[in-house]
Length: 432
Image (cartoon, rainbow, N blue to C red; front, side):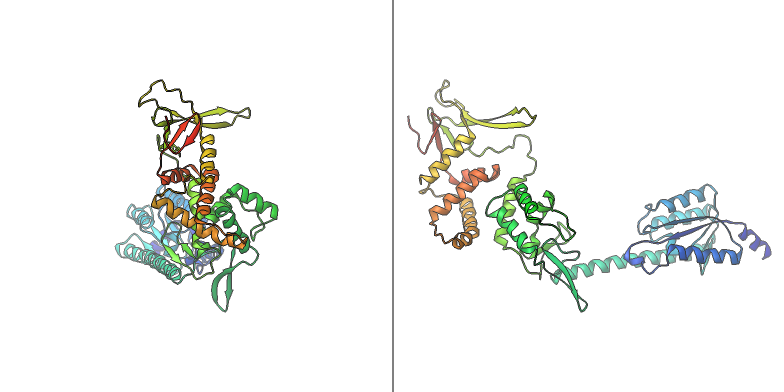
């Protein structure tokens, strides 16, 4: 017995202390307390502690703790033969790290693990007990994770979004109940941001300039960045719904909406047009390509895109439409016309009422009606009365002047009528 104790006291121990900042380990002893208690035990039992290692990392996942990995490396190289730690779960809460420890014991590289209340050496029973205790810690972690996710999902289904409230709202807690309420100072500004984007068709940069000029800041006192503005304008939370997590299911919230869903949809469509996905090769959109014909020979018009470098190094984009000369006259003299000239002339035709008799496609009709629903209240507030024809002209003017290429393309396809260009003038009918 005396020989065995003498052998054990000659083992070179590394004292390993760990504490995670995660909520599931808040009740664990601090690192300083672990070191103090284990040093005192080592002094009482005459254990040879040659080094102390400590770190603040979660042990849920294998191989993510740099100091623990360093400990394993030192054990393999014979620097230590034992580990002194407060409890088995300080060493491992996952199967990978547990397997590494057991493998070192099987190789006799790790002769003993000493904790505050137990000792584990390279015997079948003690290794089995070590694996049970570490596996129990892993089971507790797994169950805790499931329970946390279940609790979050239940909270979402009740209509409350976890986490801090977005700009325009504040988190409130009273009598142990937490909810999200309107920020009286910022909610009206957020609403106006949506109105400026959806009704006045202002860009994100224009909205940012307005916010900065008016002195708007977050609760932390910072100005909104352009990316924050776009995140606000695409967040369904403001019309009463929320995603959790981002990209996950959509839940109906119990918080008070700042805007209507109709206004949100208008803004979202503008965001999709203004920030489109990068197009595949050959998929660029040219709004007038499919409806324009040559008024001189009847051939379709094709389109060319050119870029010219400015003096400051930036590029200026020019789009030209010209006759393909593919139908009757290969020597058709019709000159090219710019996209800007086409836009101006189509707007003029709209103002003259030359499209009032058209039966637009169902897709375009729905877009006009949606635009009408959003703008009608604003128009009423100004004491105006508009006809159906006026709403069509307003929508056409918005799309052709401020809409994106996709939006313009949808509008032109929705007209569903061919247009003819002759002498750089646009007509509804082909004239010889």
